[in-house]
Image (tube, rainbow, N blue to C red; front, top):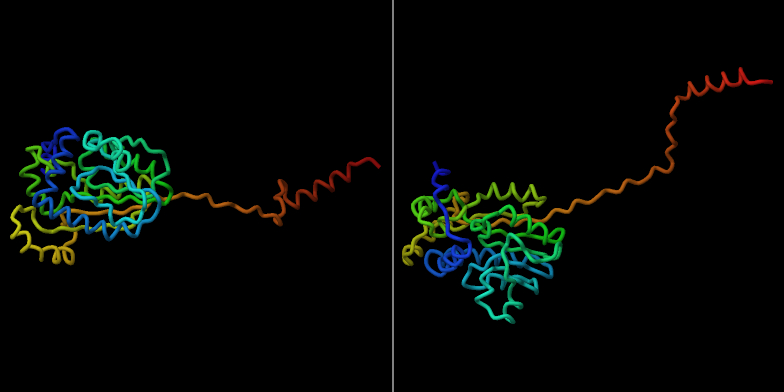
Length: 270
C-alpha cells in the first residue's frame, strides 16, 4: 500500500524542488530540523581530517561546514551559476550536478551529502561519483529523511501534491547501507534523530522536546532524520614471500626414480 502511494509522489524538476527545499528549511518545521542536522554535523565533522571537503547541494540557509577542520571546503550546486558572482563562485563553490562531478578522481577527503539522494533522478549514479572522487580511506557523510518515521503520515497526506520534502524519494537507512557496502564502503557510524512531529507552531515544538530524549533512548528507529558515516575501503594485495629453502617438487616419486635408474644401469652398454 505504501508503494502505491510512493508512485504518486512526484516532485517537479530537480532545480525547482531544491529551491523549494531551501525555502522549507527557512520556516518551521524545517528550521528546527536544520538546527538538529547542524548539531549532528558539529559532532561528526571535527573528527574527519584531510585537505579537501566537498558538499553536494546547498539546501541550508547557513553554512553547515564551519565546524570542519578541513581547510578547503567546496559546495557543488547548480544554483551557484546565477546566485553568486564569478569571483565568489570560484572561491565558495562549483556549479554542477551531483550525478556528474567535474572533479578529478581520488582527490577529495570528505564528502557531505545533505539530502542529496532524496531529490536526485539517479541516486546510484551520485554514489558512484562519490566513490570515484574520494581518496582511499576517505569518508562520506550522508543526511537523509527516514521513510519509516512518524513523518510518514504527513508524507502520505502531502506527497501527492508535489511539495518537498514530502514528495522526495526517501531512502531507508538499511537500503543506503546496502548500497554503500556494494560500492566497497565500511559503515563507521549511523544514528537517527528528531522525534517530534513536523508542526509549524513554535510553542508546541518547544513543549515536545521531551520526545527527542525519549525517542533517542527507547525507540531510535522512528527518528525523522538519520546520518550515516562511511569510509571508502581500500583493497590491498598481500605479498607472498618465496619459500627459498623449500626443495622443488619432483614430477616423479622417489621410488619410481630409483627403479628407473636401475633399469638404465641394467641396459647400459659396458
